[in-house]
Image (cartoon, rainbow, N blue to C red):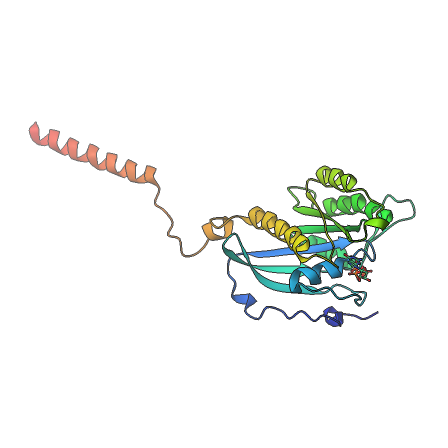
Length: 243
Ligand SMILES: Nc1nc2c(ncn2[C@@H]2O[C@H](COP(=O)(O)OP(=O)(O)OP(=O)(O)O)[C@@H](O)[C@H]2O)c(=O)[nH]1
């Protein structure tokens, strides 16, 4: 097994060079799931439109891109992770510390199982609960991806089970094939990016409202108070003159 983020031997995905210059929004997503479900394949498909049969078992590469979302340029970071697995009692998860850090860091979550592997599907609920423990409050943008949809004959997880689980977790369900279809993978990732982007604030969202370029509007109430004060003073002056 190789180490570090340079472990991705077959499809090097260069970092986007000018990323530091992208000002307003930074969308951070992490891809999580059991072993061999196609986490790396999905990321590579999304970022390069390519599928390459075999990948180094990864220890957590981080990829950066600039993408256009609803007409707005945002910087996207995608964190690949080592696999998680169920504990013997099937209640908890074996989850490396590195994965916990990624969960803490991210704003959006791609939970992946393989439709040909019921065991990988069963890790999803405990995995989601694990994410919830790390982010106990607020909305968690997630999507659930049933990968390997090209292997229909080997299907172990019916599509409606995926849909039901996604609804329970408050996310959308996508069936995808990293091997055969770029569009499905792209639709799934972009959906999540949009969810995260909205959660971070739209084009006129938090970061821009707080930006340096906007002049702080004067309070209309203060203006009104000053105007009335001047009015009162001048009318007093007039009445004094009249007397
Ligand atoms: N048929 C088919 N095979 C796929 C698909 N996606 C990935 N694979 C294959 O499944 C295997 C595992 O893919 P990876 O992307 O390494 O899976 P992973 O979840 O990152 O695996 P770990 O590194 O063990 O966590 C590889 O042999 C891939 O070629 C798919 O959509 N269809």
